[in-house]
Structures are given as structure tokens and as C-alpha cells.
Amino acid sequence: MDLKEVMSCKNFAVVGDTLQENKYARKIKQGLMEKGYEVFPVGKELSSINDIAEDIDIIDLCINPESGLKLIQECRKPFKCIVIQPGAKDKKLISYLRENNLPYIEDCLLVGLHKYTK
Image (cartoon, rainbow, N blue to C red):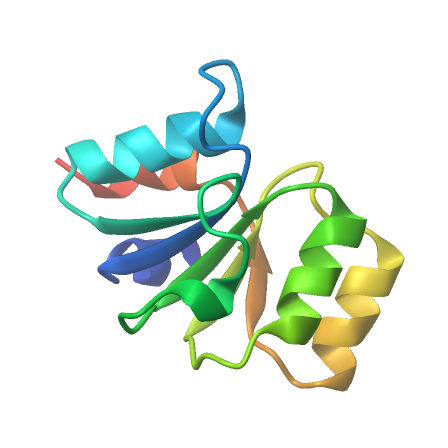
């Protein structure tokens, strides 16, 4: 999956601090909502991806890599792709994703919102 394909999906779990205005997770959450996407904030609002009642397409990691890895390891919900935002990756996370054949890209949803939405 590439960023354009990610932006064609509709349901996003945004993982990070979605409450503080200066945080990227908040900016991404707001940007997605303004464009009509269904957004489920995990981290400060929901404690787990598993707490989301609806289906999700994309998991967006805007959180420190250690916390992101823990949430992905606990995740039991199906999804299409994980987006790792700049600053949210480390070797352990990437190794886990590869070892478990979990689809991911390293990119920025703010860029995707700008390039692929009206």
C-alpha cells in the first residue's frame, strides 16, 4: 500500500496524543475529520485499538515507538495498513512488523491530506 491508497480508505485509528493542540496526532485527527474520514483516537481518548467498536482500515502511529509497538502487539482487530509517522519508528517496531508480516508504510498523513484530498 502507498500513501495514495491509504488516503482512499475511510476509517483511521490515530494513535497518539490527540488532545493537545500542538501535537501531530491532534492535527492529523482534525485534518482527517475535516475531510470526512471516520477517526478513532487511541492513546489519550481510547486506551487500546481493540476498544474501537467499528472496523478500521488504517492505524496511524503518532506515538513514541515503544508505546506504538505495545499497542500493535496487543491489537486483535483486522486492518489494512499501519502508517508510521516521522519520529514514531525504531528497529524493534520495524522488526516486529516484518516478522509478523504486518503491512506498513513510513509516511505522513498530513502530506497525504494535502496531496490526495480535496
